[in-house]
Amino acid sequence: MSELKILLRDERLNYQPGETIEGVAGWRLDQPPRSVELRLFWFTRGKGTEDVAVVNQLNFASPQSEEGRTFSFTLPPEPWSFSGQLISLIWALELVAQPGNHSTRIEFAMSPTGREIQLHAHASA
Amino acid sequence: MRARDNPFSTDRVLRVRHRLRGESWDSLLSRLAALNHRAAIVGPEGAGKTTLLEDMEPHLARKGFEIVPLRLTREQPAFAPDAIRRLRQQLGPRHLILFDGAEQLGRWSWWRFQRVARRAGGLVITSHRSGLLPTLIHCRTDAGLLAEIVAHLLDEPVERHRDAAGRLFQKHRGNLRDALRELYDDWAEQPTDRAERRLPAEGRHHDRTAACRRAG
Figure: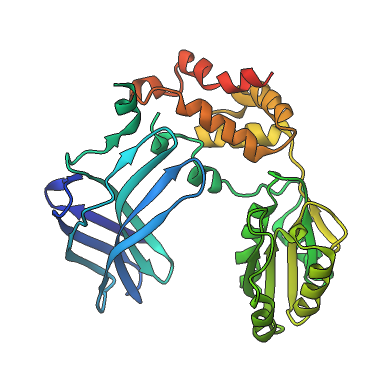
């Protein structure tokens, strides 16, 4: 049995550059994991090669089999979340426990408006 | 439609794993062992060779091999200048090389590479042409396979996609990668609105299969 969760403070999914994203990372595993890591990253999704960049990560020391740990990251100025027809840039937090490569992910938006910028909407405006 | 919602986005397509047809993994790995773990996965572009090679990795790692992945493409058709030298120093009997795109090497480079690869416990390549190593499996595609993949990506019954997949398959001469890219483009033109995208709707189905109809 493995259960991993990322809970964001106030369940916020919209952020502006430079803001703090914080919450609780929780896990329930059969055995105490060797490592539990929380990654702040962005990736692209769409047509063609995917890009990914981890901008920050947090290793939880001495993890037990069942725990909840608080976390806090300051978001960088860029890149902003956007979507067009060919590519989307998506921000996410990912919690990974080893061994077993157990993981969970939560996606959120980061831009000056706090929302994903819609490229095709701008193009057709 | 936003790229992130497109059911034919690269990440979703890459998650579709190779479908062994008429053979089990045990059987395939036994045949590979009988070939002294030196064999080729042969087939045309877009036939699933790379996917099969990737899918072999965990099976071979479980047999105790340390996997050495190598890849050449049309964009990068040769190894870095000191790659072969480093490979020579690295390889031993416990290593197994999974080499994607071996057809990129010219005759001389292939011969030179093989001399180095002899040090490894195994070498499995993908190639568009046979003859480099004994053929382990010839990857072939058919319209039924394309229909299965489309249905899987859309989470719909395969019967709904057989006719359109057949036309798309013919248009792309069996290259499933190109066929799925066309479906991506077709879906990219669809509205992002969630209600419009709902799959069971009759109207959406016609929209969604527009690319397949064009293929005919």
